[in-house]
Length: 187
Image 1 (tube, rainbow, N blue to C red):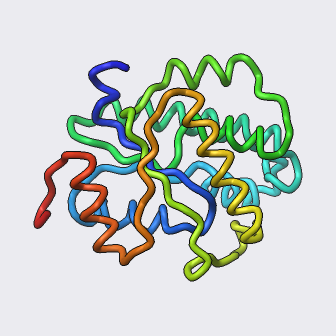
Image 2: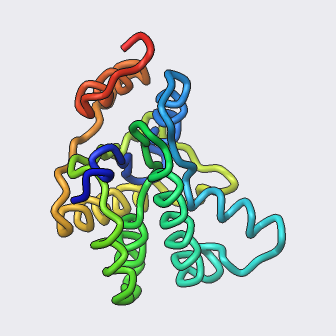
C-alpha cells in the first residue's frame, strides 16, 4: 500500500444501504468524496440511449465503471486530505462475479495497482431504508447478494471490512470519522 492510499477510504456495500447518503454527509462536514460510478453511468447512458446499461450490456457497463473508478482515483491523488470513495475498482470485480461473468486479468491488475486504505467501510443490507428507483432496479435479495460479492472481493484482496452500524446518519458519520482517524468540522 502506498502512502497516498492511506488517505483514500472506500465505502462499499449493496445498493440501497445508505452509502451515498453517508458520503453526502461526509462532504457536508468538509471531506472530499467521489461520485458513484454506477449511478452516473446509468444516468449518462440513459440520456444518450447508450448501450452501457447493466440490464443491456453488463460487460460494457463494468468496463465503464472501471474507467470511472480509475479516473476518480487519479483525481483523488491530487487532493491533499482524506478522500472518501463511493465504491472502488474492487466493486467492479465483485459486480462481474455476482453476475457470473469472467473478470479479465487487467481488472485484477487494476485491483492490485489502485490501492486504498486497508480498512474499508461496508454498508450491510438494511431493509428498512432499501428503495428501488429509476437507476436502482435491483431487488432486496439482489442487494444482499451484491453485499456478499463485495465482502468476498475485498477480503480476497486483503482489505479489512468495517461494517457500518444500522443507525442514524449522524451515528454512521461519527463511526466513520472515528474509525478513519480523520478530523472534521464539529467531529
